[in-house]
Image (cartoon, rainbow, N blue to C red; front, top):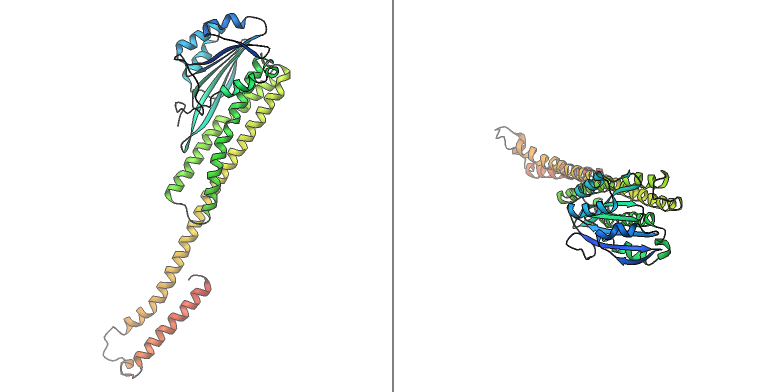
Length: 338
């Protein structure tokens, strides 16, 4: 499982150079679709915001974007390599933000990255790996021009909120599996396949927590650090994203604890079953030992054994064996061993 894993929930048109969408907005309304090389002239106009979405672009495209918005070399290098930890960095009056995305890919979680460049009059999103299309974010923002008119920081909030919201379907699917596993664990000991699945789930949840956790610090800085391009009016919205991230963390921690308890319970159930089997085996061995011992005594072929001449010796020995075995059976049954 790595960043290179891919999975997009809904199809989207992507040009050969990785451009998903590039538009200009004035007062929250889309006024033009543009080429990357036109972005600089548009963003320099008053009250114009350029919003560009890229998916797995090559370095040539990133270089063109860099020239249009005068982006820092280190930020471009990070966006090209796409193996970054969630973070926020300030380069002059521009922000560079990295967030991790997650999607279910079969029975495991596939991770991706979104890199965001935010500055005066522009926002650029660069997606790598598994990620739901941001077309829904763009459509939702465009459907509410009054909100979109707030500017670049509102678009930043909308994307981060969308990323965090998309952790929930992953967690809910895993939660359903964990609950089913929890119900089965008390019925019988876990099989090897179930134990392996439990381990995989705990590992995936740990990786998801490592991807989610740093977003708390990212949103905290957006809320409190007086960063450029983040107006005071937007801080409550970033606080809301922070709360969502913390809720996701708590759900992940709860699921990992449940899986740990399920594994411990499975071990206890297995040990109890082994103990019960051992008790049954010991009980039957003790019962079988009685006729074995008596038969062994009379099988020693001594010439002088008084009972050999007794007329009812055979019936007496058989009766003794049955009586002792029945007594042992009753005793073990009462003790719960049988």
